[in-house]
Structures are given as C-alpha cells and as structure tokens.
Length: 146
Length: 95
Image 1 (cartoon, chains in turn red, brown):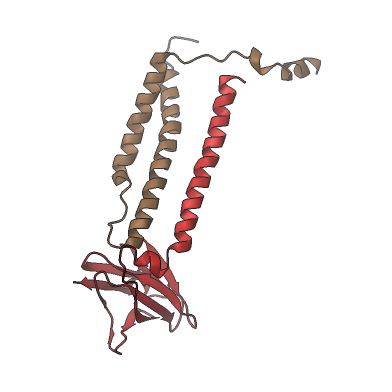
Image 2 (cartoon, chains in turn yellow, cyan):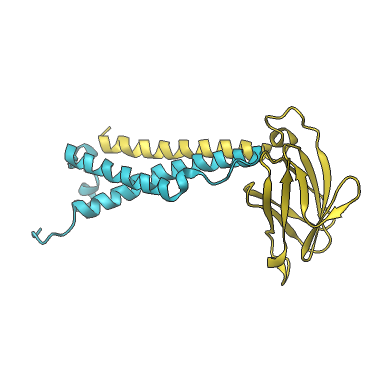
C-alpha cells in the first residue's frame, strides 16, 4: 500500500474515531444531564427543594414551597433545586445562558429541570422560544445568595 | 475507447507522487500551528462557560473537547490550503 493510500485510510479512520468519541461523550452527558445526581455533583446533600415556575406572556412567576411568589428567582448557593415548569398559554423556553442550556415550557405539561449554583451572583434568564410580540421582554434573573 | 480503458487500468504503484521535502513539511506544520493558535485564541481557548454549576462545568468541558478537535481539523485542512496557495503561487516564472 502506497503512502498516499495509507494517509487516506488514516484520514477516514481518524474522522470516524473522532465522531464516535464525540458522539459517545455527548450522548452520555445529554442522558445524565438533567438528573439530581449530576446537578448535585460534589455535594453529598442531593435533597432538592421544589419550586414551581409558571410561564405566561410575557413574564415568569416562581412559586416557592411556602406559597410565596416572585418574578425573580431567589435561591441559595450549593442547594439543589427542582424546577417544575409549566406554561399558561403558549410554548416558552427557560434559557439560562450561564448554565449553557435551556428547557422548553409547554401548556398542560410539567417540564422538570434541576439546578444548583456553586457561585453566588445574578444570572439572567431569557425566553428562548418566540412566544408573541412581547417575547423580547420576557426576561428575568436568578439571584443566588450565600 | 481502448486507450481510455488502458489508462484506467494503470496501477497505483506506477503513479509518481512528488514527495514533500523537509523544508515543505516544516512550512506546512508552521502554518498549521499558527492557524491552530489563532483558532484557539479567537475562541478564548475553548472556555465557553464559567463553572458556576456542576452542569455548566460538564457542558463547558464537552464544549472545550469539541472545540479543540474542531481546531485541529480546521488547522490541518486550512493549513493545507494556505500552504498550497503559497507553494504554487503564480510568480510569473512561466510553466
């Protein structure tokens, strides 16, 4: 086999190996991503607090376990939270750019999302599904405190 | 028709591939290294997310691996194009 032929095979097999590697690690991460085990990684306390998230044109409402409501999400650092998200009207998208991922929020369906922040701060949240003329105003914040 | 048929049957071993000299190889790999450096520098060395959460850390790590592999492939192929452009530039010396 000539050198050129060998190089050709190296290119083909190398490309296949790269795609298999990326596909495998992406698949494993995507499969495990939204689980309390991964969200609580490095913390033995994986007991979560459930917060209900209601999406509607064009704002978010957060309902805490004690019944209080707010339009900005206030959470504590290193605490695991389970967000149960539902829409009152059309499809919305709960997008936290700092975390690098989003979940769609549907009417008559509860979308579950686990979050845990390890650094205090204020993190913006955007609606990532076009939901009407006021879509661009549908923003809020997650305030993480010690 | 027979001539075309005979040409198709030319064995691969009989084809003469010009070999790259050591100087050419060095030029090529210098170009690849520069392109890889630029790619990584423009992309903030693959650092996309702040590690504010275990999930963002995992996603950020995956992004970095993907970015580096894309950078390697980009620099190899773009490096070849740049190398060919420089090597076979028409400098008016005739053919």
